[in-house]
Image (cartoon, rainbow, N blue to C red; front, side, top):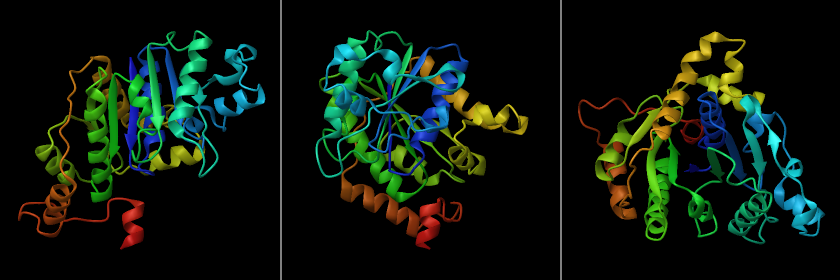
Length: 289
């Protein structure tokens, strides 16, 4: 099974991805996580350091694939999750999609790509071009990480559009949304009412999720010394169980930009009488207040 995790930049995709990868490993699966960001920090929470990238290794070997061994590019992370960082072209040059393609090509050359029960692609930021959507070419399911804010849901809608386009030529489905560190879910529910798709989980505003990223540890590793965090791990185990159940998923029909803007902004400014009071739901929104 191959998963591609997308979402607005800074929404917590990498932290979410690392904990989902760990949850899948805890369920007995052999897991490979591939970071698809030039910052090459997707797997930091699993390994505790920034591992060398595939693109840098290829350049060092003058793109002689026969001179590269699995241990040159695949690093063991927490819970036995194998980790790869694709890396990326220099800023302002090249295409991230090309780097993802080269990564998959190399892993296939090393007979590694098909050795895993689950391969998870953690993809940078918003989908803004075909290159960033390239991991969807290799995925069975897309997962979208969001919060209860307008910008994250607007990005989620763009990603849904990419899934729909890729599903025309690939056996790809959207597994669903994951709400990350959000104290409420009313805008999420308003969105999925307009654009039907599953919501796999909504994680509360738990500070330890943010702290885990700073510490370079998954919530599962942190829970080894702080059992009070076991309940947080259960959220990720629930996501993993739903994925392993091979959900039918959906091919979404995204909302038009203007319709979505009106839908969410009108609800935000004129909530129903029984709606929860809107409060800043993320560090970004707090900065904007």
